[in-house]
Length: 311
Length: 262
Image 1 (cartoon, rainbow over the protein chains, first blue to last red):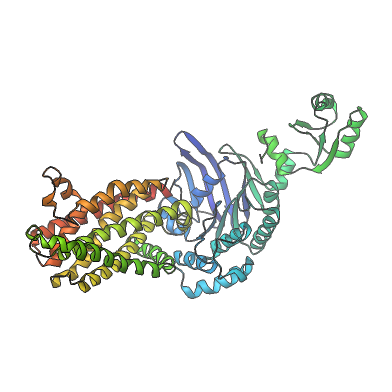
Image 2 (cartoon, each protein chain N blue to C red):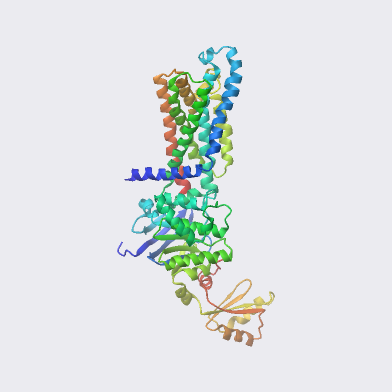
């Protein structure tokens, strides 16, 4: 590999299950030190891609190089240098918090001494020091997630793979996890994550690809994607249910770059939301609620696929 | 290089099972002792008194206790193997998903399989040592060859452990194990020469007994305990048990790979 800072390179990467094409010839590159995201709805092929990168799912086609090695022959050597936070918790709930890290460290061939030192640091990092001797079973969902993150770091991996790291967590627990991931990013750890939360992608990712139905629909930084596929502001209007359809027709000539009529509201993509709202009112339309906000990756996704991310 | 890799990886998984076993070992020792004491007491001594009163020429002229004990040694190895290769393995892939966690490390599916087989062999050796000690305490051992009954019992257990574990990795529901138990383990337990010589079986059923690994295990253990070892017959028994074990390993390597590397 020419550039040693390219950690993962995929060309035409494909995964097929029977007749179903889960990943359909995608290309991407991951550089050292960046946080790279796969954003897309459930079933977009994100997890299949992650499993191929994690060397636990053989690719059906295309090329994949990880840390300069080929997963089809060098799986163990690659996995020795990866950390994985799977979508579903795979902790041993019958063992204690500390034992989970011990067992996992031993899988990587680490010495007990080294594991003990790292365990102390990692439990401190994920704020679980007081629970070190407790069984895992009664821990909350957020604590289990943080423990899974600590476990994935026990081998001091060069790349950390996180498959939907905050799915199923309550908002407060999500923020704690985000905070920890942000600190890892600050420490220069290379992160690859999948998510269907656009705020997660926006906050954490330096660069991301939008995936839909096994393909990459767009790639870039969150800012670049929003600039390329959306307007600076969005005006969200809600009308009484029986007026919604009529309103959509009357809005057709309001100066906006694009109008999206969703089931429950109408989105107007525009440079200046307030000015657009004035234009709406000037036509004698009075929405039940109106909101001017900045464009997000959700809008990018809507533009690219015609569908919403979270359903 | 690849071979050294494989060995050390399997040992890493074996160590996991040891860590896991630390929580439950006391209970298993207790049942490991109680099981032979109850069986040898009730059947060997209790039932044995009635059997011996009618003469034991069909048993080779030894007491029923001496006849039964090595058969139970082999049969209990089968039971231990059944227990170790079903729920703990199924739980790891289906409920706890610790297998899915383990394959994200350098370990490969076959390493998890071999690591657990090492643990199963250890558990078989532990239970068989206890069983032999209880046999000796009951006065059921007739020959110093009985000590070789330890590896014989472990081998008998492994001939069950490898194919059953291979099968476990193909199961999506734990109710499958009840079927194996009901239609596999229990009939074998009763009709493989453990409790009575298979010469007592109808002629047309006897060949069925010869193809079951348990009959070979029972015959091998019995010949060792009674001191009636014949080299040719023993070689057939050992060869058969080794072959079944090896086929189980080949099958398990595949089923582990298929289940964990989708």
